[in-house]
Image (cartoon, rainbow, N blue to C red; front, side, top):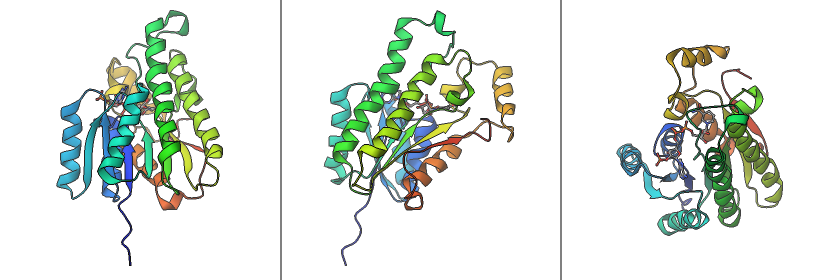
Length: 248
Ligand code: NDP
């Protein structure tokens, strides 16, 4: 009998935070993992070393997902390494430390958020649509802030609304290939992206806001992503799963 080939997952923005937890979790589930990063090469190398120490397979690949050529090269590198791509987790994303109202948001902030969060996801989704194996999985990272509609989050939430729209439409566009496209929308999760720029009081208030009365952990979110990537989620397609302790 021919052994099942190792399945391959690309996780964007996996040098730290939620992406690093997703990469570790998918590696533990048996995927060979491409640990993508933008600038933190040492952190990405540490995630790869950790996966290998635990018997998994991973490579670190630098690519700014906002650049279409770099996104293409990221997929090329995955195919060179393992000859196939089964899963894309679109996790790379940025949120500004300061969250002024829309009226006070500058052009550079708007352009950066849309370039990385929206164009970055578009770039990798386009490659995935062209290259994923039949039966593959795409999981995009949205945010529960769409449901919360918190003042200060207008531009960031708008980028995530675009990602949810990509999710729902691509699920239909990939008809006939058994590829599912879903999104996970975390609530406040204890990573640098969430904690940077917030006072301890603001963090405490948001931590207590969910009925489960704590912040999410990167591992909480990684479990939800791993479920959607798994055979167990084969009938879930075109959905957004909010993982936020019941916040919204
Ligand atoms: P972190 O800031 O901890 O990590 C972000 C990751 O994205 C890093 O690995 C970073 O790489 C990478 N990255 C940033 N820009 C690019 C780029 N242009 N190209 C490739 N990689 C890039 O964020 P989180 O782990 O908190 O967030 C992960 C995702 O979850 C994001 O999409 C975020 O919007 C979403 N999310 C997070 C929530 C939270 O409370 N933390 C809540 C809701 C959603 P490098 O280190 O090399 O720069």
